[in-house]
Structures are given as structure tokens and as C-alpha cells.
Image (cartoon, rainbow, N blue to C red; front, side, top):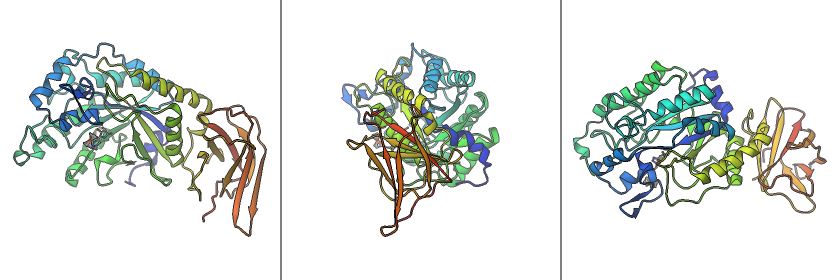
Length: 422
Ligand code: H79
């Protein structure tokens, strides 16, 4: 993407690999239910999917009072879980600001809670050494008469997008970039058909305030500093430019009273390995409840994944994408560190007798293989069959699976990884 950006500006992002997304707003309170009716997945969309009149939705302001919220709890947990950055919804599509804004009274300051949540997160992140980032819905705003998306309270024909853009978006983005210290990134979303000139102006505003603040791909038109994958999507092929996959733990971003179908720790790790192995970052979401608490099930899963990362972090942090291998890996996935010249084999489907694993297509000679967890060396056999033009690496594994979620094997290479093209 934008190649005028100094590479070092992206260093933190390339190294981070794993971040915490936090979707929190007025939609948190109904949690996917309105007047006894269930909203579809995407509880943060409830106002739009249920066509809730603004005058009714606004009443949530008087109920916004997260009495158990502690920003340090989030930041310390995120660190324990192995995450390196936090992205908080400063303003989602409904238009409600979680920060003290001078240009709108539709904010947390006009609720019983009355305290700036963005500030509390930015302070806690600064003191705990975690990179803080904000999400800002630039195009959609269902509260502003001139914002995009609210077709049930406002007549689109009477809307003046530039009035909203210059009256709310630019001033609020300036507030976010000047009042909360250094931001790692501003995360825009749903650019739809926003004119490219306005997208450029928005990027210019961000960079004028903080030249090092990254802008994600969803500012539109390739103006961002890195590519954002589609929601809950992982590219098929490896990419060498930086990118990110935003992902939910259940099936919604905002808190849901009903959706308890959470990914298992193993599924989280599988996604992390897939994303990191293709050169990306995983931005994994939690939706705090109306008390400001992280749902217990989310915590449980992230905590277990974090324990795995404490033992196996070498196979994630400091790695780059793996070149695409010729075949799908039936037993798991791969990550790769070019500076350590090590290929990490993530065994998520442990072989049965005779406990032998096959990797096809690795051309680089292997100098040794060890179990990452214990350092125990493993027997292996590398071969090339000219008639079939096939490179094979066979590895003998212990009979007892060391980690049923993901057993990592560190494969030392004699040079940079080279993969057979077929
Ligand atoms: O913030 C999260 C989403 O709310 C936002 N992006 C992530 C990071 C997003 N904006 N638009 N979309 C996602 C795509 C829109 C999907 C929709 Fe639906 C399909 C909107 C209405 C139907 C999903 C299902 C949301 C509500 C029902």
C-alpha cells in the first residue's frame, strides 16, 4: 500500500501479531434484545437492524453506567493474554462517543457514568506499556442528521454529508489525536462510497496531528498504511505487506445476552497461527457487558490461549509470514522466523501410530528439530525423490501428545526457507 511511509513506523504493528478489539457503546446495554425481540448477529447494529427511532435509542444514555469498569483490569489481562495492542470503539456506527467531545452531546459525558472511557484506557495503556488505538466510524453515524446510514429518522435526500464530515468527523478525529497521547493506530470502518478526496483529507488530518499514527485499510482506496482483511476472514495466501484480520470470539462484536457460542482456545490458536503464518495480525474482539465487565467465557478462552502463548510465544512473536507451501497442511499450520532461520510446525491434529508427521515441499536442508515446549530433540528424515520431484520431511513424534491444542516443533534450517513450487 502507501509506499511513502517509513517502514519503522509500521515496526510495532509488524511485531505485535495479536491485539484486543473492544466493542463497547450504547448497544452494549440492550445486548441484542429490544422490547423482547431478538436482533440478528451484530448486536452493535441493533439500532439499524431493528430500525429503532433515535428518540428511543437515545434513552440508553440515561442507562449507561458501567459500575464495575476498571481500565487496568483490561490492560493487564490483555498483556497476560499475550496481546500487544488494544483497539477501542471510540465511536461506532450509532454515533455515540466514548470520549469527552466538544462537538457533540451524544457522548459518555452525558450519561450517569459521566467519565471519559477513552482517557481511562489511554492512561492505563500508557502506564502498562501497551499500544493504544481507537476505532472511529467515519462514514456511518446514525445519530447525526447528516451522517450516513440512518434512513428511518432522516431523509437521505436532505442530508449534507460534508456538514457532518467537517462538523463532527474532522473535529472528533482531531480531539482523539490531540487529547489522548500517542495513538498506535486509528481504525476506520465501512468507507462505503465516501469520496476519495474526503478520505485523503481525513488521512491528512490524522497525520498532521500524529505523523506516526497508523491508519487501517478501511479508510478506503488503499490510502491506509496496511490492508484490513474482511471481518472474520483470513486470506488464503501469504502476504509480505502488513495486514490484519479482525475477528469475533462468538458471532457478534457488541455484547450479546444470548450468543454463548464462543471459539475454544484451540480455535483461537488455530486462527492465530493461520493469520500469523500468512504475515498478518489477529485482532480478537471482546464485547464488555453493561457493567463494563468482560464476559466470563471470553476471559476463560483468552486466558487459556495466553497460557499456551507463554510457553510457545517464540513461534508467534518475531516471526514473519511463511512462503506458501504446495499443499494444504492437514495436521495444522506453519510460522517462520527468518532471523532465527526456524520454521515452526504447529501440530493441531496429532498423528496416531506410528506418530510420524510429513511436511512436503520444504527445499532447505534441516539441521535439527526440537519440541518447543521442552527443547527435546526429535528424529527426522529429509529426502528428495527426483523421479517424483518431491521434497519430503518426516518427523517422529513422541507417543504421548505434549499439547492437544497445538504442539509446536521448531525446525532449524541451514539457510533461508525455500519452498518447492509445483
Ligand atoms: O465493528 C464491527 C462491525 O459492526 C463492523 N465492522 C466490525 C469490525 C461492520 N460494519 N459493517 N459491517 C460490519 C458489515 C455489515 C454487516 C451487516 Fe449485519 C449485515 C449489517 C446488517 C446485516 C451483521 C449482521 C450485522 C448486523 C447483522
